[in-house]
Image 1 (spheres, rainbow, N blue to C red):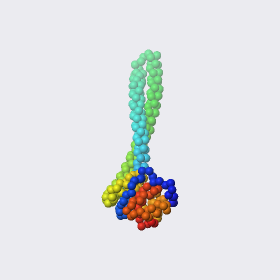
Image 2 (cartoon, rainbow, N blue to C red):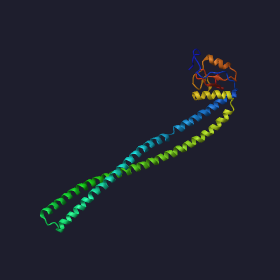
Image 3 (tube, rainbow, N blue to C red):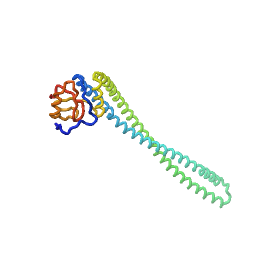
Image 4 (cartoon, rainbow, N blue to C red):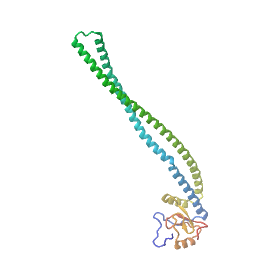
Length: 264
């Protein structure tokens, strides 16, 4: 795509005087840009590891399960308290029935009316004991179910922790590999940057900070940064420019580096 010259303006913030740099130094910008692109890709890969999504998901599951485990533990504790209370309620009733039954069996109660009252009380105590035992049995069944649920949740937590640890190990290994490669590329970048004149490097870094890349090759009359074909007017100006003149794309503002494939 070729844009007409009229009405075009270089993006704001990319102005400035003409910079001079030897063609070799300009070509080194492409090497620097390739390194910066590779470093950016590495950082993106580091931020996009599939393990990161798995870890985040498992951590959410772990957090939710931890709440469930706390609730299950509280339920077990409450039911254990209820069972102790039920047993405590039963014990004196049982003891009283045993005492009363012993008095009946011993013949110690001579008064028929008193004996009949005692027998009725023993029967009442028996009914009360049955009611309390049923209530205790219900609590025990609930306690058994709550304890089983707590154990199931505990096993689930162990499984999640094991999976999480595996993903963390995998992530750490991949991050370590990326960091090693990143350090090597950074060292190489410093070496290449040291070869580039300071004013040219400053402009490149400013552009890269603004748009992600600071330089692009001019190939087949097209800026490889914005992929827009240079119009005839600019092409004529580029053709007439001295080899050491640093060119700029009038569309995107990137430094345009002439190569053997520029078509000039």
